[in-house]
Image (cartoon, rainbow, N blue to C red):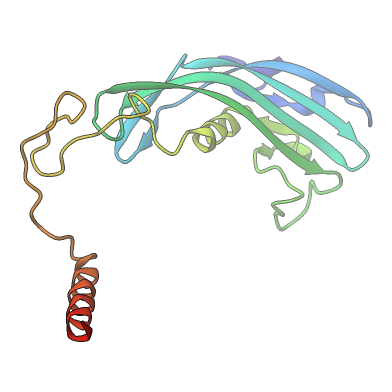
Length: 193
């Protein structure tokens, strides 16, 4: 296994080795491997597979502030038409670990960084944090283009290439009640007039 920051496993930074006094900070560049992300059963591949992530660590009397930044592209099928698509993602994630919680029996989302483990909770799993931060930073839809028309729900034709010949004569059952209301209102107007 290749080694990460000063003897730690790849993608892990031992914060003890930074030897930060309260009020001090450090910047560490960490090569981080990124795994594929699966959305809707489809794989989305980070490019590059290993990013140079920037980790800023700040120490204070109340704890350790952490900031992780990197940029990568993600490629995979368009979520509307399945054509190849790609988007660039800039990740800027922050976390915090309160002082004196190394032996806390119950984790606290506001006081504990879930990516810290090991002796005194000082080994930061940057690879796991980067994976989760990338998943959170993804857009709601990964599209081949912003105005992608998608595929026809009936025949599967790519509506970006040309309109299909399908005729939509069925009423969506969710709107059927509105049609009935329209008929009743029309009858009421005819009776009044």
